[in-house]
Image (cartoon, rainbow, N blue to C red; front, side):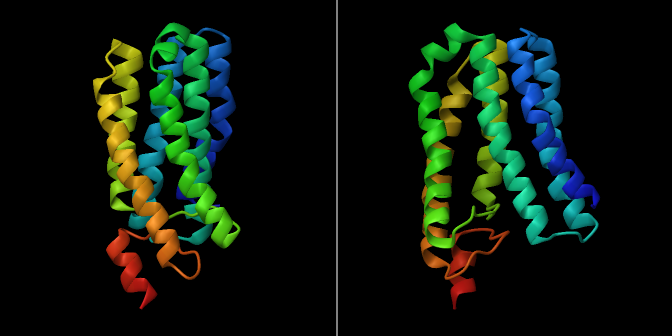
Amino acid sequence: MNIPNMLSTFRIVMAPFLLLTGYLQEPTLFFILFGLMLLSDVLDGFFARILDQISEEGARLDSYGDILTYLSTPLAAWLLWPDMIKAELYYIIAVIVIYILPAFFALLKFGKLASYHTWITKISAVLMSAGVVVFLGFENPLLFHIAIYFLVIEMVENIAITIILSKPKSNIHSIWHAWKERK
């Protein structure tokens, strides 16, 4: 196992502990663990490129780590800040649906999850991460709401890439790259 895959595996292993922070009512520990999970997400791709360790397995592990982070975060937040989560419930449901739809399309077409890691995916991940921190830490949902619009663009692009590609491929930078890949 290489460094990037260990960092992705860290997120997978830590997801239940993020939920535990909610159960134990430990918001400070939540933010520390959430921050470490986000940092590992940034670093796994960085090290994969720097160390020339980009692989299909690594992309898949990264995607699983992302999914578990995205699923455990709202559940832990609901345990820690139920009133805030209830106030933003429609937005949170929208985020979950927006994450699930492209995965559903990829599973239907390819029989497995896609790991495209497009540029817009990276932008929306940064915006959503910052939006979650600002929302939960400072009770201001504006950046979280803005990030959802980027997620919609990401969803549309990921579904389009799934439609364009004839077989699954990781690390597609954009829909334009997918179109080039098809030719």
